[in-house]
Structures are given as C-alpha cells and as structure tokens.
Image 1 (cartoon, rainbow, N blue to C red):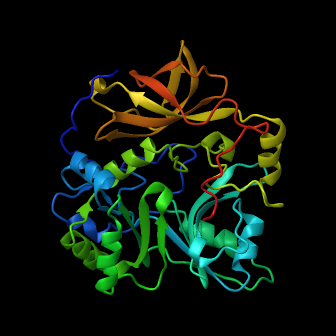
Image 2: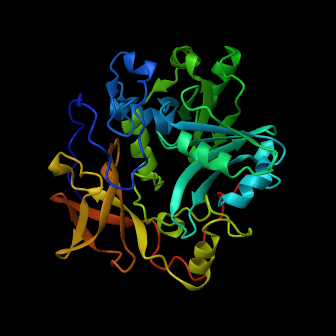
Length: 376
C-alpha cells in the first residue's frame, strides 16, 4: 500500500499549455463569476474557467460523498434540440436508444462516433418532452451543434448552441435533493429540465448563466457545500468514469472505455460506428482497456496527462486524468494494451502505480456487458 501525503498547498498556476493530442478543441472563454468566491483557485486546462477548489479540497470531497455539495461546471458546452423528430433523428446518429424516451426516464448518455467507431463527442442527456438538452466537454458545444445542424436535412428539428447562455451546476451526494428544493423555492431553476443521475448520485442543473451567482448563494445558504473540480474529478475517477479528451486519444472506441452500457445501446439499428461496436461485441476484442491507477503518494505529485505507462521496461499505454481523493489518496485513469497482465504494476513519470481493472481483457466477443445504466 502506498504512503499517502496530505493535499499540497493551493497552486495558483496560469493556464496550462494546450492539452495533449486528442483532447477536445478548447475555445478560450470567460471565467466563471464563481471564481470570485472566497478561497476559489482556478483549475487547469481544459477547466481553467472554473474553480479547482475553494480552499479545502479534502472536506469538499467528503461533502460530495456524505452530504450535499455543488460544483461549478459552467465551462461545459450546452446544446438543445427541439422539434417532434428530435428523438428518432438523434437515435439514428448516436449510440444510445432514444426513440420513445419519456421525460420520466429521459436521463442517459450518448456518443457521436465516426464510421470507424472512434468517439467524437460524449453527451450527457436529458429530455423534458419538448426538448433534448445535452452538455458536453468544454469548448465542444459549438462544434457539436454545427455537426448536428448539418445533418438536419428535412427533419423537423432545430439545434441551438446555448454554451455560455446556460451553465451546468452539479449537485452531488445523498442529500443533494435539498439543493434542488432550495433553488425551486427561490425560483432559480429556470426553464431547463433537472438531470438527476441516481446511478452516480449527482444532479446536473442547466441554469441561465446570469443566475449562476444567485444559485450558488442560495445553495450555500441551504447548507450545500461548494466543491471544486479537484474533488469532483477525484470522485469521477474513483467511479471509473472516463472523460473524453482527458482519458482518451483520437483512436478511442467505446469498448475500451467501458461506455458500452452507459452510453452505447446494443439493441438498436445502424448509426455511424455501429458496425465496429457490433463486430467487437460479437467476434472481437478491443485493442486496449481502461484501468484505474493507484499512485504512490510519496512522490508528492501527479503524473502529466498523456504520460507513458511503463511496465517491465516497455510502454504499455498512457495516463489520463489524475487527482487526489480524500480517502484513496492519489488516483488516476489510464489506457493500456488489452494483453497487459491484470496484475502488472506501472511506472508513470517516475511514479509507481498499481492498477485496478475497469474494463476486463475479456470484453467483447459476447462477453457479458452491464446494461443497468441504459435509459431509465
């Protein structure tokens, strides 16, 4: 077991250089108004417009896990699709089963892929019966909206890029419902639907951007703790949830990342990339697999995103996201060759790392896939 060091002093670093190849194209935007809150320290790219923490990242992480916390994710892209054909149209272009999706079960994830099954966009989705709302990686909302708009043809749909006009504020923890109730009572929920993801104990609120400050004040006043991206990302990594562009490269396909089930439905017809998904599911194996990394805390640093994962003197993959978890210590995600032994240990940037299997080497070829997170 690695020795864990405490959280380091806050780092007030400038924006990092461009993310490694394969990261989403980042459009430089406006800093969140919540960066002016007491103790707020800006995160690094691609999240430098929002806070990494508010002075106490370990306590923020505990609040996310045990009580209720809010996280500013207003740098996310937001796209809205309206019109009577929206669900059948998106069903035909993306990886998730969307036809017949009702407002009561309208929370899910979906991917846009190219013909080779390589993931282009990962969307967190909610439909309210009149419109489908999706949020996606920072700087990619306009690109996604342009792609969708180019595919409308004669379909009765309208696509709007609402990035910058609507902001994602995420509530986490078993008591997060108190935050939603407080905002509803204050009339601050706006016209967008509430995206409650019970499987991950989080609720995404799509709020008018000009109400973000009032919403944060209301939540904090109701006892919901501000938690920055350090705590949120640590919880995401611990839950084995990869992030497009941070934990992937341009060749990433769904089976490698564990997205079959959460974001890819196997019981639907043709869409771009479907042939690759079906071939791997029925007769093949993905070339790589996602792992969680337990990093040696005595190094007192985290590996660079994209750094080589080495085992036995050979490069077997690369590191993605990393963070300091309030209980697990320094952790990360990595993508390694499928045939890498499941008990192999790694070195990354001179830091020792043990692996936790996320995607089994046996994935594919009709291996059992957990479909519990299909649309609810």
